Length: 537
Image (cartoon, helix red, strand yellow):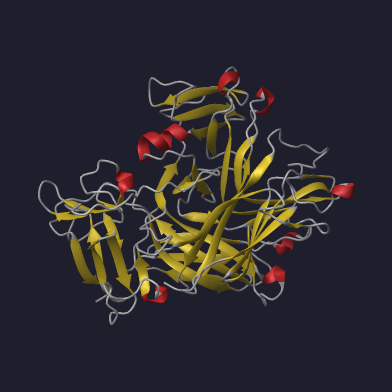
């Protein structure tokens, strides 16, 4: 049976899961990083950085379409709010016999519903068609959208996008500087019908804010752990200096009323060109499951084009360089089908929450079992089912993946923070920073990176970005600008499991299509997070 320890020391509450049952969680030094599957006393370790997975689907009954694309019907949520104070806004219209909706999320939504005080990192993933809710695209190279007569730009995309933009609302110029995050869904007959998005909410800032630290100085005699089945039940472990009586959920390492989404598997898998591979997990996967990934071409990583780049590597106009695939979530498996002309290697995390109401009727808080693969230990929400708790009931499980944050930060776009410049070729970016990542456990690096912009009060800039994450573009056939990366481009290049290069396109134009156009906002720098995932679980 895996060993798990949850309790308190003088420094505060802690949770530990051992990889080897021969090791004692209470006496094994925290410096022996490789001996822990999870250790809250090690920097960067947290029960979960994914706060929630939000489903966005079209609803043309509650929010019927009206108007036109340029002047749509608008609905403000919650009821009684308007364009200056709503948490969400839905724009609806009809065009060409089809219906469209754009769902806008504002920072107030996350503040009021999740207690998040900053603008959070979000990632949205669309399903592949209007019929299947469990099929998703992998990465793609777009060599056509950004071109006219062979000139313009090409793009490399992963599966997700994160763009916080200035809010577009004609008629209300005074609030155009309100950050908004938007996803568009359609009716089934649209040219590119999208019926469903899974929007991942990270408990991490999307801008240059520091990650809040809610701990404080411990005081002798504080109650920092409570496991209590009475009065509805409690299982709480407070952060250092906090107590289990705090009403602020941010003051806890674990709390029965804030249970994050889960990582149910991680590792790497090789997929031959045009072939299919299957990843099997130890859990039944709900429809709120997706695969986060970084992908590379198969080959010696001593050569840069065979290394992991996020988004995937591109260096020319050849559409056959796409490391493409699709995947389907079904049962307890992820089935990957390659659409690439080359063999590829996928580094992945399987992420999910239940998307269901909490179960009831149980009395246990700690639960043990054997799922046929092996024994496990679980801590679940008090009062949840003792026989079949769902993922949103489970607080801790020895079968879950825990991905520590190995490094994070913000780099100003200048010669101090990003000292390396690219003269030619410039398709990678204008400036680079090489990082050495502390990774004594030999985890697989999993970076996320975005461009963050200075803000302007210029009214004409109401379509400018606050930040753009995980996108890369390169100008082609545009004279002296050919080969330049686009201004919002970011590129994270994994050299090996302790070395990472971060590239930024700086203040280059965001488009070279027809003519060059730049945002009124100028680049401030890049925000990055580097997770470490187990090689196989």
